[in-house]
Length: 281
Image: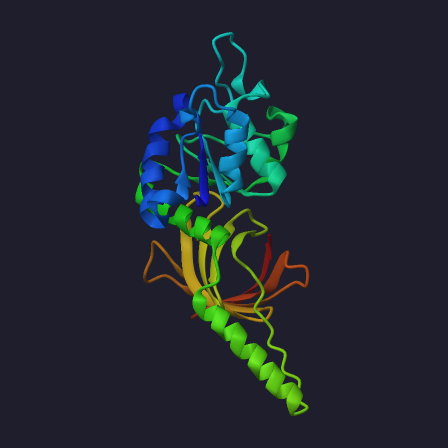
């Protein structure tokens, strides 16, 4: 069944939707992307069709271009103000059902504020957005794919057998009077914000993590690296993207019990400079 629902306005971002759909289908499979709700057959209940399609999806991608917020119908009414508008319905249903909703900005568009959105879409303004630009299309699409993978990740088959093995070991331990309780690593995948406004995009596979740090001013990835997590303790290494001979960073941190904060320290190798690290989800 489709895992990704692509929401967009034809007059606003049809070209980008087609390009992005090609990327997503290549990465996740032809049948895993629902792109065009406007192909609903005449006479069909379009609300029911939207409900059905979204009910089969895990993630809703909202393409937002320069006219997404201001697009009007033939009567001059803003489309987003119409409760029966396709795009509004798609997003409202996804938000109400608790789907993972990822705004995708194109054409240099900005995220709308809560005040600019109807009541049933206001929480969209609080979702972390990703940007797709023509100048770095392949790179931005790669970041988007990684973000989607983090949102829809399913445990690989090996984890199932590791779980079975853990049960066997647990039962064996109980039989011998030994308690064995394996502790799973905390989930740190997703977006984290630094105090200066820069962000970490973290993808996680078991105990292995990958980190892209997006600079608060340039909005580009300027540090990249990998790390590992054991229980709630995180260790990582980062390098500058645009300067291979630049400083190397390493760090240790711990995840808070509620999973909303990462606190630790970053060391700049060579100078041995130490700085506190604080990230919030």
